[in-house]
Length: 231
Ligand SMILES: *Cc1c(COP(=O)(O)O)cnc(C)c1O
Image (cartoon, rainbow, N blue to C red):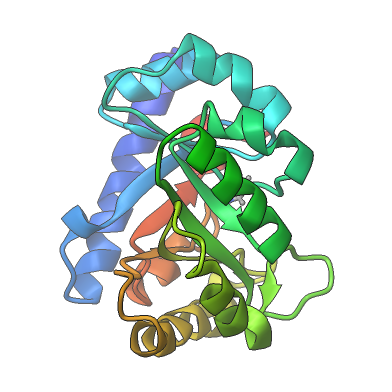
């Protein structure tokens, strides 16, 4: 099989699985955005996925992402920053990415707000939450998430569109379900606390667990290996 054929089959498989999971939860697959995570993969593969109808791409390192985005950013494509962002790279990241999913501290939020103002835009962001409490995971601790969101609501150049989480690595995807449910329940609380934001997005679910995440309400799934192959 050519790499084009492989990616085409992979995307068809992922799209079918998204539709099945949505159906199980009585949801429309149209409310779920597939973000193809292209980290470590060459731009040729991004172009192949785009030509097959994928329009959202995810990268986790600014350094790696910048040349890719500079070379490939058609008007209908969206690049998502999904990795830890250092405040000294905020300016560069803002010049390239359409949305930052990984805001997990006030310091980072303030830096993004300042740069967004300077570039005259309101930046879509998600608050990354460490739901599981695993020490190795990035994200604001669940218990501190509402405080961070309240602080971020004072930053006029950030548009909080929702929440993002990374589930822990587990043996069976089903074990990640409580983490996804925890993020959805946090969103309910934030909708009451800060109704001026839509909180429309729950970015949760990766190759091993996106079907469970969709059953629990994911509106963005970030899928790398199931589309582009093992890294
Ligand atoms: C790498 C990565 C993904 C995609 O992971 P796969 O297991 O390849 O689907 C999703 N989200 C984040 C934050 C990542 O770093």
